[in-house]
Image (tube, rainbow, N blue to C red; front, side, top):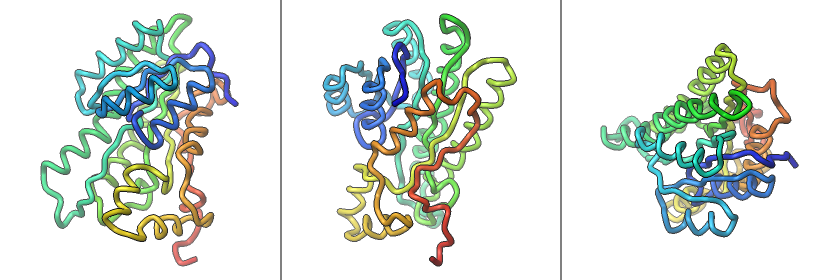
Amino acid sequence: MPDLSGKAAIVTGCASGIGAATLRRLREDGAKVLGTDIDEATGNKICQKTGASFAVQDVSDRAGWEEIVAKAVSTFGRLDILVNNAGIVSGASIGDVDDETWDRVIAVNLTGTMAGCRAAISAMKDNPGGAKGSIINISSTTAMAPLPTDVGYSASKGGVRVLSKSVATWCAQQGYAIRCNTVIPGATETGILNAAEEATPGLKAAVAATSPMNRLADPAETAAAIAFLASDECPFMTGAELLVDGGALSIHPGF
């Protein structure tokens, strides 16, 4: 297991799914964690159970990011890890998406990720011992194989891929040992998918079948990949994309 002892982290969207699993995993690996979510009751409960700190956050609030990062630094004395996990779906195609829906998805999934990176870098470059840290942005297989039924989600997750590379290379050129990588999960057993299953019975089975492994991922499996990128085990890995998709993007869709 990666050793994250002495490291301080922020995990957004910590109240469920990949975010909750990541918070638990980072705590198990020794990190001090500030979990954030718009769902105060659930997020606070999970953080209390794991010994993490909690703060209410709407990641689309760019000014609010400065407060979240300041809280982490004042609590832990530094910031080593940021996991930009919070995200939403719209379920709207290009044929029926409205401006309000589009703007909200982009604000949360893409602009929120950018604002998190910007605020985290500002803190990480002033870490005791020098500029160092690891930013992990959560994208999706829809960034490579977009959903015709969700234009906003697909576009925003594609944007996260490119954003991460720009952040990674800029930090490297500045001489900062601040890495930025992307995790690309496939179909995962999350609250969002469970809610979709209620509206469309059989959806989970159909989604699971897109992977050669013919199953959904457990959020803990994605959290393990995030913990690796958060650790010091891969110091030369930046601007990379780590697929956790059960082989879904490695097979011809006809087979």
